[in-house]
Length: 185
Image (tube, rainbow, N blue to C red; front, side):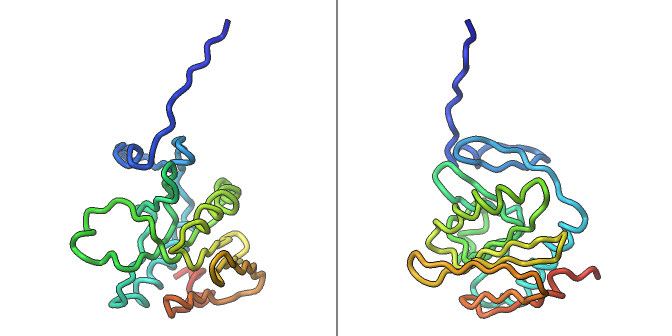
């Protein structure tokens, strides 16, 4: 007779206390999911987005973070977007925070291994956060952009662009040109 072990699901708080060392993981509905590193192209595009946001947001009260800052999307889920923007967390009292639950904008740079989760599971979790205004998916293989923006309570517009397009985030009053996102220098 086979015995099946049942392990309790983790909470976001318990997950955030775990030291994974050099490894990266996310919490997905109470289950730890290990994450692999990205390619040089992924890292370059992620850095381009972060730099563009940092330069445009300085002094605004909104701050971009790279994938080291956790986003608490549910009581049992923690995500590490490639880049996220938070507003109102620029005081010294937030210096030791390891997660926030109120991003204004979230960027996910897609890869073959993460696209399915990013475009389905994470999209639903980000849309459920009342603070989120804009979710941007960056397809590095085809240099395409998908922008999902809140239009009001419960309303969203979802546009995918095959041609080069700039990413506008109206609530932050910023625009990032397509060429800047995909720059190779």
